[in-house]
Image (tube, rainbow, N blue to C red):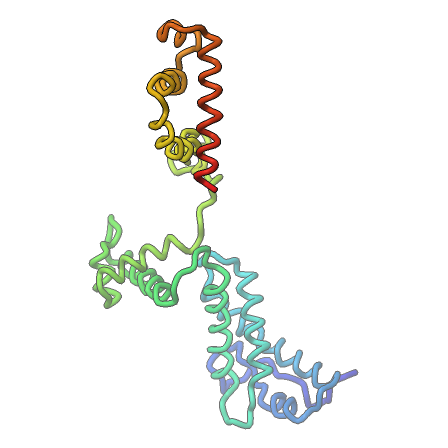
Length: 270
């Protein structure tokens, strides 16, 4: 179904601030009078299309911040659609005055909710932005070195502690993959290669601590045999020679003591 002849949307108007701000006053006035249906949907789409260059211009302000321009333009277009749907020309406010903060807010919300790898409080996010702008300004006046924290704090009119928090937040926007090659490495050495592994000895700490009081209650000979076998790593033959008994006797004593200790420890745990 074709739209009404009076619904054509001019592309530009000299009354607006920017060249990408079309004159859609008449179109909005007709939009609020139309009932839900194909004619209203067509007019709404024409208004959105007419203002899309403005949304793309606003998205361009946020380029080089870790998000692709195409994705930013999609977010800006979503904000524009929300502005068109919520705008009421009968309140007397120009659409551009309402749309610009709506689209900008949608883009900022996208960064806040979807782009941060780590959860960072809103206050710290604001500090990050102030620090980033201050560092950009100072880089044009400070030559040959990076601006200090004190200089950033003074330029941004904040305390040094706030400047430090903002600088730390600059590194929290995205996370480093464990498979990423470390700076300065020439053989593909990654962060995961620098991480330690679990110590096998940790698995027996609990067992040793649990058996220690029961081990102390054993007769001295049995306790000595167990110590030589499990702590001294001696063979049964050598233990037999040291104790003056047969290897078979040593084997029976070790087996009997271990069974007794296991039963006692399990009863203690229960």
